[in-house]
Image 1: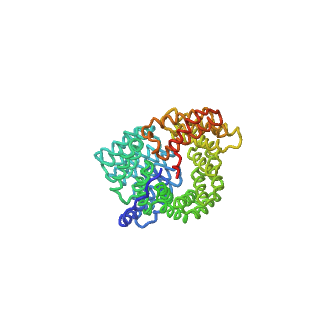
Image 2: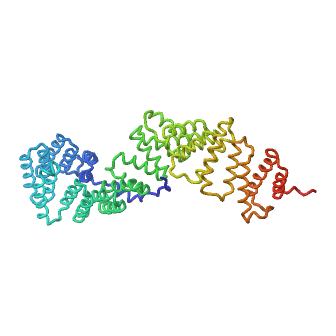
Image 3: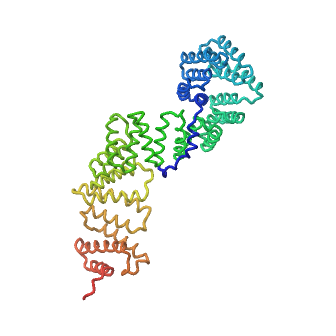
Length: 538
C-alpha cells in the first residue's frame, strides 16, 4: 500500500510535552492493560528514580512476574515492597496471591487480612484480593470472588472503577466480549482517566468497529497526554487499522516519550517507508542501526529507501551487503525485485535478470513478480520466456482483465515472430490465439483486435498471409468501413490509415502470390491507392 509523503510532525512545543513521561506509572498502566513484558521493562528501568513509589513499583513488578509464571521472582519483589513501606497494603495482596498459587489458602487469607487492615477504606484493595482468587481458580473461588465484589460495590456505592475492570475480564474469560466492553466503558465513566478501561474497551471493540476503538483511545490520550500507554496504543491501533499515515504521525510523537521501547522506533521507520516518507524512514532506520547493528529489518529498509530515493550506487552497496550479511534469512519478493531494479537502473541488465529469476523461483505464485519477470525478459529480448512468464502471471489471477489477456497475446506474438524453429513458432502462435480469442469473446468492435489475430495467424505461418489471416483482416476492414468518420479516405487519421494499409498490403500479397486472383488483387490495389494516391506529376 502506497501513500503520499507524510505530513510534518507536530510543532516543537507539542513534541516537548510528549517527551515527558509518567515514570514508573507508565509501567503500572502497562501491567493493568495486560502487557506484562512492557510493564516489566519500564518498572525495572524506573524503580530507582527519585519520584518512584518503591513499594508500589515493587508490587507491580511482583504481579508482573507472577503473571509471567515467575513465582520466586514475584515473591522477592513483594518482600522488597514491604521492606520499602510496610504500611503499603498491596504487597500483602501479592504474597496472598502466591499462597493461593501454592494451594495454601489459610496463609493467603492471613495476608489478605493484613492488607485489609492496612487499607480499611480502599475498595481497590478489595478488588485486588478478588482478582487474586480469580487468577488462582475462578471456579473454585467463585463464591469468594462474588462476596468480595459485592463488598466493593457496597462500600464504594458502585463507583470503584476496578470493580468493572475485573467484571469485564471475567466476561472476556467467558468470551462475552460485548458485555465485557460495556463493563470497561463503565470503568471509564467512574474514572475518566482510567487507562486499562480505555485500552481494554478499545481491544474488545476493535474487530467490530476499529474507528470507534480508535476514537476512544484518542479520548484517552486527551485525558492522559503524557501516558506512554495512551500514545502507543493509539499508534498501534492506527497501524492495525491500516491508517498508515496517521499511525506514523502518532508513532513520531510517541517515540519522543522516554518510556518508549526500542522496537517501536523500528516500527516507526517501517511506517514512514509505507507512507512514502523515504528520506525520514532512511534516517530513522540508520538511527536504529546505530544502537542495534545488524538489525535485519532496518538493513532492509536502508537499501529499500535508497532505491526509492534513486540513490542507486549506495543502494547497490547496501543491498548486496544486506543479502550477504543474512545468508540464511527469508527474503521477501520485494527484496529481490528491488535489487533487480537497482541493477537495471545502473545498466547491469544481466544481474537484474538473475535477481528477478530468484524472486520467481522463491515465490512462484506471486503474480507481481511473474509480471515483472516478463517485463525484464522482454527488455532482454528473450520473448519466449517473457510470454511464458506472463502466462504464469495470468494463472495467478481469478479474473484476468481484457488488457491482461490482450497483453498476453502480444507477448506470444513477439515470441512467434522471432522464433527460430517451427515447433516454438507454432506453439507461440497457438498460445497467442488462445488469448486473443478470449478477448474477442467479450469485445468485437475494436479493429486492432482483428489485426492482432491476423498477425498471430501469420506468425505461425512463417509470417506469410493465408486464408485465415485474410479473413481476420477483412473483419477489421468491415469495422473500419462501418465507421462514418472513415468515409473520407483522403483525410484518415494516421493510426487508422496504418490499419487500412496493413490489411490491404497483406491481402494484395495473398491474392498476388499465395492464391493468385488478378481481379481480387486489383480490387485491393485500387483501395490501397485510394488512401495512398500517387504523387502528382511535375
